[in-house]
Length: 420
Image 1 (cartoon, rainbow, N blue to C red):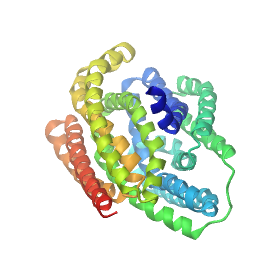
Image 2 (spheres, one colour; image 1 turned 60 degrees about the horizontal axis):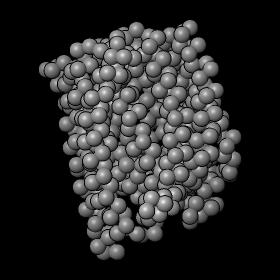
Image 3 (tube, helix red, strand yellow; image 1 turned 135 degrees about the horizontal axis):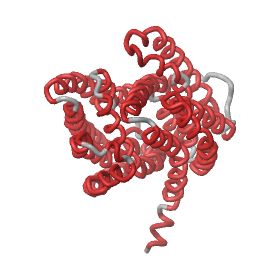
Image 4 (cartoon, rainbow, N blue to C red; image 1 turned 30 degrees about the vertical axis):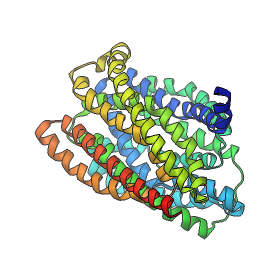
């Protein structure tokens, strides 16, 4: 029985394993940088570090704007339908990213001093990330679309191990600046390594490829923007209101929960190319069947996740990060856990099914509307409830957004399955 199940899902199991190793190589090193910063910096400086990164990730989002995710989708599609287009993907997508990052960098240099004040100088140290992070994600999307999970894992692990040699020294010697520079160096080496590993590139812009990727990436980029506004913009709002130590605890909780969420993210990325193929072949009934199955499985998984997180997290923080074991932690613990509980349920369905089958627009429209509303609601609640108001705003709108676009997607696929 087990052997039969293994052979039935052999490709998914192998790809999941290699994707896990790749995530360990890439996300593991950024997590180590984060942990070292938490241990070596005082809570206030650590809060500044996370505030700056929140700003930088906001800028990076515009530099990528869904291009890397759209690339993964079209690479999987072109690999089945058009090999010539496949060769043009890297250069055509790279040109789009370069153009966006140049505009974002110029605007940051011009506007930054007026908005960020004394924090602006720290953002300058991280400007290379505005280009390097989207480019690394672009390569990642190509490798994933081609199902080269093994090669991607090996490259990422080697780069991660090399990077460990300088991360500790930089943070120990240069504190906050060293932590920021570590991010730049890691992503630079990663981009070089991925570039060496993938050389099937035609140095020519393909207008059709650029249009197709650009059109779909815009829809997904809008979805990411909306998602950021109702999930991550809270850190920027907290920083603006000078809740710096609260940011430190909040981001520590976020990072620990993200680590627990990684298996679900990996699974989503592994199954995504399969759903792209199902949709390309118009196998809507299979998509609908798997959607129902995933709904039940990951709803149960989210309940288990919530219970285990509540039992384990306080002990981990007490043992390893005792400076952050305080009243702020216990004010944040339950609402933050519930936010990530909802992510356990929706991560595989969103990335693995909805996005990979070309329905990013559903998420885009709902995320933008709810995201904008979250900004206003967070500002209102922070004035009445203090820092915790931002977290409750995020939690409430998370649940509303997920419910809406899952119901809409189910309805659309059900109609296609019925008529197909």
